[in-house]
Image (cartoon, rainbow, N blue to C red; front, side, top):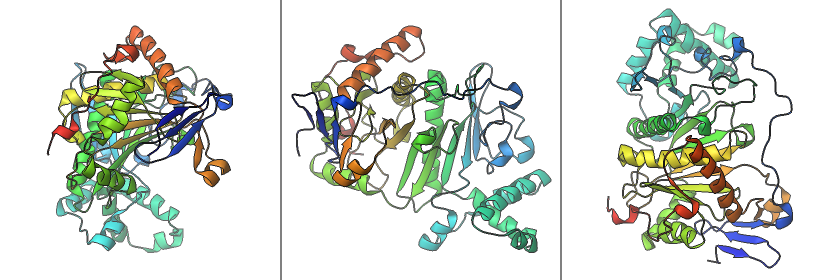
Amino acid sequence: MPEPLRRLPDGTIKQVSPLTGTVVWTVSSRAHRPLSGPTADRRPVDPSSAGRICAFCSDRYLETPPEKSRLVVALDGTSSVLRDVPAEHLTDSTPQLRRIPNLFEILPPEYWRTNHGYVVPAQTVDLARTYTATPQGRSHVLAILRRRLTSAGVSDDVWAETAEAVWLERGVDLFAGSHDVIVARRHLVDDAVFDDELAGSGTLTPDEHHRYVTFTIEAMRELYAAQPHARYVAVFQNWLRPAGASFDHLHKQLVAIDEHGPEIDRELRRLRHDPNLFTTAVVDHAAAHRLVVAENDHAIAVAGVGHRYPAIEVYSTSENQRPWEHTDAEVRGVSDLLHAVHAATGARVPTNEEWHHRPPDATEPMPWRILLKWRVSTLAGFEGGTRINVNTVDPFTLRDQVVADLHQLREAGTIGPMRVGDECSHRLGALGYAVSDR
């Protein structure tokens, strides 16, 4: 494997990912481009429509499939989870987070039925029938199902000619899917003046972000339990349309799939021969090159090497390897660093957040880690023809920029406690995952 990071005499920085072999060049003449700014067509917020900006907003609950659960927070700050809220009670509480099925799933129940013999559990069938036993629930399910089927080519005539009972049976699939969305409460920040003041991960408080991460972890654990043929649950967050989001409303997605995917499989093969791969090739390398961005007692964030887009990598330093195996303090450590780098990035930069964890059926040690990628460049013909990716922000610049912003955010008290930049230990062997044989 070539040296991961080289600086040429003219200032060009060439990177090779130590994990994937991806080649990335940062050419000095293309660096220092502005990342973002206020939108040109920003308009004042209309308070009367603030809850109806998109289908994820609070006044449009019936435009998404029946929710699986919601997290509500009491006045004293304690939180609780409500499950399977009936349609007629959706507005009885104010959810900070909602878990809903994706209307257009990557792998729908029919995929699992046809390819794996999946049978919808009786309790899920009962749940669907209970939900549709009320007029509001029945109307909701039929409306959502019709929208899904219309997009699949079912005509109005076919819909009208088919008995309602048939459609309600089809509607059970709305409750049996394995592609979920975790939706945050706000579309805009509280007290927004303009319509481009979006509420992103970094605009949450550290406590709110911790609940967001914890709620997502529980949904991941439940998807593994509910879909016996799932070998991996992919978790990701697309922020803003240039990064693949359908709505500019904060949400994560979880997709159960029946393979690990080629990247995980490649990493597992390498881990069989080198269990400390992530320690030596990534985090130790970052420490040696002063690319550590921040750390706390349970996690470390580093500027990534060899990514198509500028990327910050957040690693759990726990010996626990799957998110749901972490203690609450360990989850909080990861959440605080992830929240901080989101805050430093800003809500106007398109990003992809990618979670990686050890699959349940894997025996090789693998740390829980989350990548935050800035979608600030567009892959084009040069990249496609040469497989050399031109990235406008090199790891050193990325580290320095984020560190400077974190110092300001910490001074303002808007992020959690952490050591930043040169305050970090830069010690080798910071990851603890390989010591566990679980």
